[in-house]
Figure (cartoon, rainbow, N blue to C red):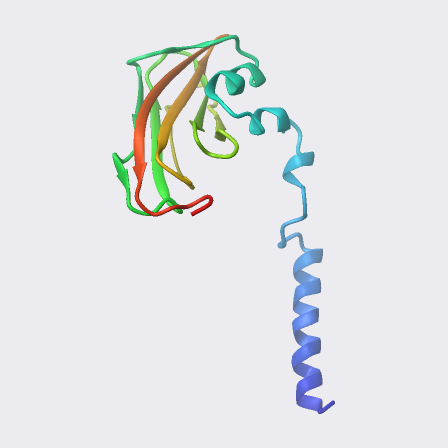
Length: 156
């Protein structure tokens, strides 16, 4: 092996090793071991199952929860969605995508005294109802909108 090739290969391995030691590389399954991780909730297949796994009994529709989502998503790989809860005492906002392999897509804890407004990018495999789900007290509320996907994301 030539000196130049050796230096190139060894310096790359050194950088990778230092990054891993510094915690800059993602650890496999670290989220699954995090305190508060609710694996069962993220494996649900419907809105009702997600509500139950999160600790509720049933969700009711609310006009005080506003869901922002496009009517048509030209690319299911990146769909921007958001929610604003005007329900007093909102402590959690989540997103459920009905036809994704796992319906519960994201859960955000809302600290006391802050606006319950969140947004994220999601992946959608096909046209589906998208739900914003808000928890206030021990009750769950939802808003729903159909999003039509023209180019597949999760499986297309």
